[in-house]
Length: 371
Image (cartoon, rainbow, N blue to C red; front, side, top):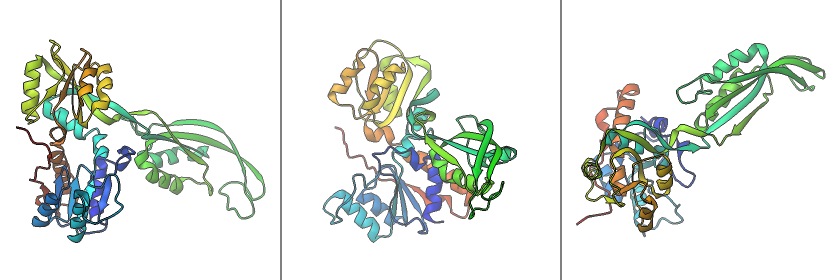
């Protein structure tokens, strides 16, 4: 297998278009056409991670966090980022990062936390905007059904639990072909009138290139009139965080004890107890203070995340229990998520690539220690 085949698998669950604009995801070091020996899956890529990859014969590191985030102007080995990149290049090891692309996936980081905690009736806490786009085109009426079916095969018209969604309006189109044209209908230098159907379909931005390809392959006109409009519609199945429920409500002390044990954390920092039971819970892996107000508005009894600052805890305002479990701890199960996904996916389409070649990193990259 080559790296592109592995990353294509990852991008089915975490398309790069899902990532936040500030992020740096994808193949950070290496070439997509390089042959893969083994894959090391990790949360962070540090020097010891690269050493582990070398020792285990891995030519690709799949990391959650990107080692290159703000860009590099020099490669002198003067800081831990430069040292990692230099060592990886020297040893022909590629590095791929998913970060917020996986954060925004409905099967991603927060969904894994929710599953580990046993939450049910889950949905996205902060549905993402800007993912959905709309294609509008015009086609001879007799060709409309055939063109729609071709677009559907490229995932056009897929919205949540529904597919083959479209809207059509019949009307009259006009055009005049010049002397250099080869018109499918009408004649050169003559105004032509045609009964046409206007087709509109919604699609995810990640599918744009394949949908345009289908449009060009199956539209009968020599020159295709179409437009793509970016929407600000929220995608109910893509976005940050998850909100769900426990099957039975818990007392606050029991909830905090359960949270500490289940999330395997040495410390849970929390806001003032409210003397009420916890049933509806919002979770968000990584730094999640920005979503406190959203969790409150969603009616969550508790909000679990990380990196809350001192003043963030005041935002609880006697309405919600805030629980900071630690950044690393909130994302620690992401490695297992990726391992399980890649193992299943690759064994289905590339059985020759042995499952044992996908390796879970044994190195802890948590930079925080507790006493």
